[in-house]
Image 1 (spheres, one colour):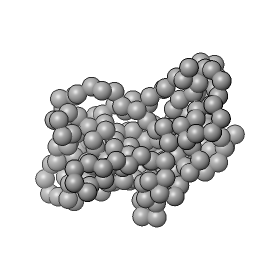
Image 2 (cartoon, helix red, strand yellow):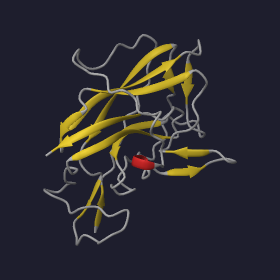
Image 3 (cartoon, helix red, strand yellow):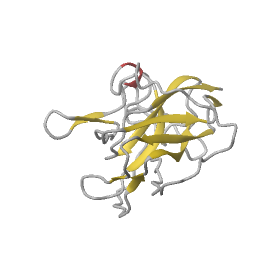
Image 4 (cartoon, helix red, strand yellow):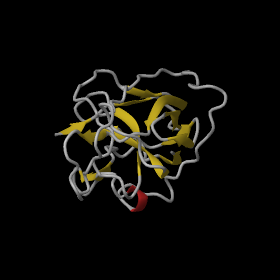
Length: 208
């Protein structure tokens, strides 16, 4: 029987002047949005769906408002598998006015960061609670930092026999939960729940 462990992202409403999160030793993990595309190459298992017309939503992200950019800044880009990497989603709003993001139903959009590569199951992605929050995700003019956590275990596991093959195969659970990801190189990817922000990625290396 498969067990699905969803990483629920706590969406914060921020006001202008929100201070930087994290300690002074937080190092920048340069965005790899330019050479990497959701749904292709190392990110081929990041799900993409068609929305209205010919528009495509990848990783639950919607087209961002004009003047909005983002990047992932991680405390470390090398970590032991099974640990949690702290960091920030840094959003820059150059539109000159505050932007309040809501999903098409008027609910608070969700965000989370997960690890992927070309070999992980397509289902190995963060999940979001089906709860409609009433607060907007506010982007004041300038730069705002939203705290993130990058989990370095699988997002799911099975308590029964492990099926052979298949893109959604999860490993067996250990001590009641998903095991650490294998050592290797991954991409930290921004996922959303009807989140109108640009794609953001950063390379991460996991050790045993």
